[in-house]
Length: 225
Image 1: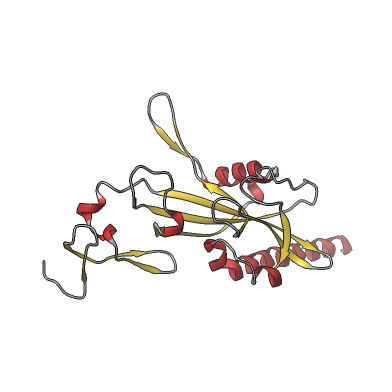
Image 2: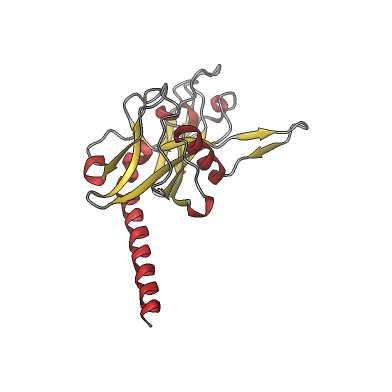
């Protein structure tokens, strides 16, 4: 192999390998550690993973748009997040695997973590990206050290119904659920996928209320006629 600017020495086997570029939806990532190296990666590759994050929102008459967050206790100590979790893979008696849908995972995790029952037709997916494994997504308690995998991150938004009670159902993992405005959120220590997309999330929530107001005006015009 010719050694030039498109190659790099593998940190594990010390052989020179071609730099691998992974293109996400918004960014291009250069994987420059040993995961470039097919020889090293073969014994350290896990199945791709999918994680969902649900941001429940409301519009307060005094404070305006707010989102529901809690503070992580374990893991990601101190970071703020919505309801979240992984998309599960189920194996039947015959050994066949079935991947849970992202919507089902979002509804299940929200119920488990906050006691809130979501209606699928009101659940809106507004961001998703697949990236190489990063330090924050490293598998814990894994027998294989320095494992590599790709992870697909997805964010959903959901309008709160003002009826269901918020409950901290996993007090060993996160604090009570609280409501926060955009002005408060921008100064918070959010988990990375929310930190990166906080402006976009509030923009999409704003569109939701603008659409609702337009529908309300149209309905009022019909009644007037």
